[in-house]
View 1 (cartoon, rainbow, N blue to C red):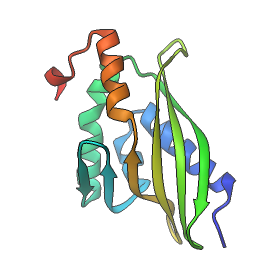
View 2 (view 1 turned 180 degrees about the vertical axis):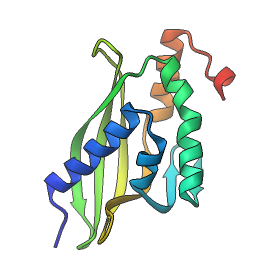
View 3 (view 1 turned 180 degrees about the horizontal axis):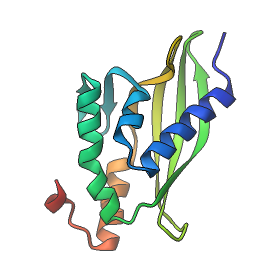
View 4 (view 1 turned 30 degrees about the vertical axis):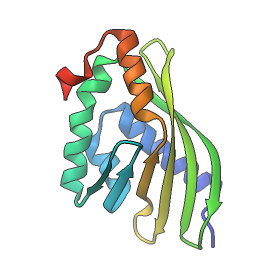
Length: 148
């Protein structure tokens, strides 16, 4: 049985809501352990929920300085790899407090449908997040090195 688009949308809505609320615990529960994040510059494996929570919390001051107030998404594509694995491409949409789009990013997620916990991200491949974050920071005069 493959994962439905509604189930994927519900998962992404929970994820976007957790990011909007800066709720690291909820966001971390949406990941399998270990979780892997890959981009053009680095690869990282988060071995535990505590490591995921710490990593998320570390990024929140950056997003807050950039004016992030809410997160949305567009599901761009999906590919069922097995009965429990689905590869999705998501455009994350980042908005300020007035609802103006700050930026967007494209990411691929390998999701696994777990019996007890539902969909869990196993791998995230960020295709343009670093570049777009840097561009937004430059536009807003935010020094990312001072926040690292």
